[in-house]
Image (cartoon, rainbow, N blue to C red; front, side):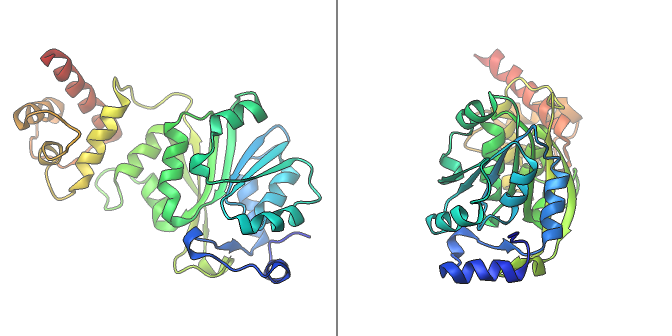
Length: 291
């Protein structure tokens, strides 16, 4: 019994007396067309090991199992585990893990289930934890082919915009450093149970084979990016000068910015990813010379 409709979803919820928990941001998809399109756009094949984050009652997990070689579904809510045993009972290629995804050793999972080869990630993410999960996957250098995720629409928009737009920020730059973002589907609130207050979008993040910019110190670059957007109304120089992570004098910071673009009053939101990488490399050289 596929779950991607209100009738079957309600039947399972009532059968188990399941109560939605706000703290887990639970909203189950009730549109089978959306579910199937997500799996199709994720390019899941019988060659693939797929990590699903937040399977809920197994609505998308069922379709993933029918298309993938193997699926690992990580679910934090212990009350959903008996439901998943029921809804996934027909499939012998799925492992359900009752754990917080931020505590799972995904590198070990990829080694065990996929011989360390790149995996595909598919998820309907709770809005409150979207950024930590995405950044955790990228920064831990898990072997990933792509991440196809349902997120709040404005978060999806933020991931793919460029300099000079109001949504451009640290998340935009981080995502674009690691992957090519593409919004593949807009999903109205009416496609969920319970109905959320905002619309959603599915965005596919295809991992770059090679990062689009060369940077000497990745950690420093992201410190600079965070500092430049922490106080958006300030100039880039003031943002970096006020950061507890950047240990340079304002004079040195301004010289680095002038060397970058000739404009000491530029704001961080005007810089491209390439310019942030260049600024990071300039500051890295200055810090090395000062030692």
